[in-house]
Image (cartoon, rainbow, N blue to C red; front, side, top):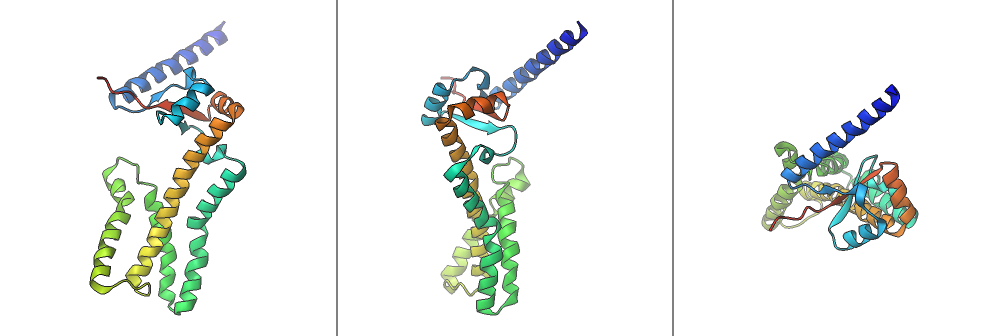
Length: 208
């Protein structure tokens, strides 16, 4: 009897928490959680209309990928994680300037900064947009001095842009690929919901 009561209480607490989250999301115009009332057919229509998406509850969206999409995503990741360790030393050897090895650190730093691009915290949001200020500064420098890859500033900018750009490509592709995979694989869609790996969200309609 007590066990059943505990189970019911846990279920009620979960419903209360979900109701509180919905009130918060509604007040802040955040996407609506429609996981409990969605069919695969409606999900396909919603995604195609760009009114629905997913939020990963366990791990990253790339955990849903397989086949060619997984391979392409991993290539994108390797381009910002592994490529700097190979390409920068090759260029350093060609230029015979060991200070340029700092480009590896610059590339990884701007990859790290890119992770803050969607945060709402002022300082970290600024870090996420640092590549924009670096770009503007570099453009001004090139107008004045010309574009020469042998310049330290130009080389470090290329390294920074490389790390930032490929991180964003990987992030965008994993979300797009995950949606495409769930659209194609009905069984994966329902199993991911049942295992609470994903949440289905819908763009909240603005009151007229």
